[in-house]
Image (cartoon, rainbow, N blue to C red; front, side):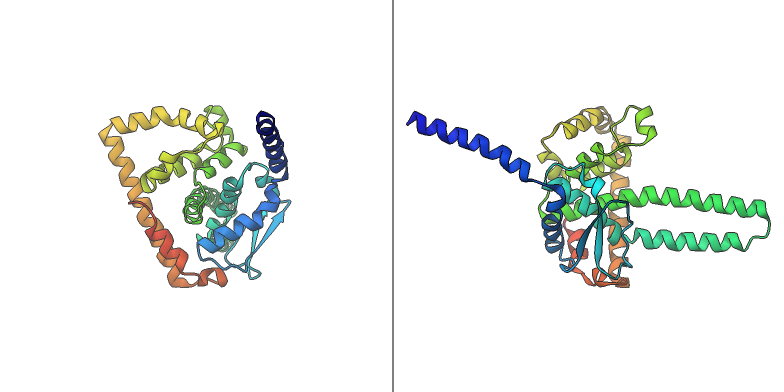
Length: 277
């Protein structure tokens, strides 16, 4: 009997590495992507395209293609983290980030072109560039939190978004402040989840990257909890974010968009009603 048990243990220990070796992030994209699409009632005929270079996803993509950068997938280690990459890109589409940036850029460029003074024209172009950069950062963070909504609805752990961002290269400011990579985006996600989905935060995510992130932010969390003014400000900001998100979703639903993505209305209802508060 002991020999049989030992044989079974040995067989199982050999089987685990074999399974782990067969996992491949690129191969998991269609499976995980379909899960995210189906559970959020998004068009199931969308095609995931793996790219070697960065390609901005847009609502105006008439081919219903969703671009996933291969480099980003290199920072994933399981299906939750692949879902984070996929959901983040879907967040960009739902929030119409690319369309908005293109619209603002075209308007700003047109205004700059109408200015005859060369110095004033250069200033207008610089302001346009700064506006685009600031908008890009804000849009990026809002796409992240929209992505976490999609992950939750699809049954994936939204904290994986924080883990993936922590693995990706950070900014120079992160390095100078000795912060975790992409700290501002990660903290934005954590605050959003802790306010809207506290049970997801309580459940946690078992990996060293997330544990290191928690250890870094714990003093900030403790200080905020002990300070009534800071806690009130935090709750006010999160409530405002929730309202802004609901407003964006309502706008998305009302306009109908430019392709099949925008014909899906179930996602809008899910995103606006699935939070725990």
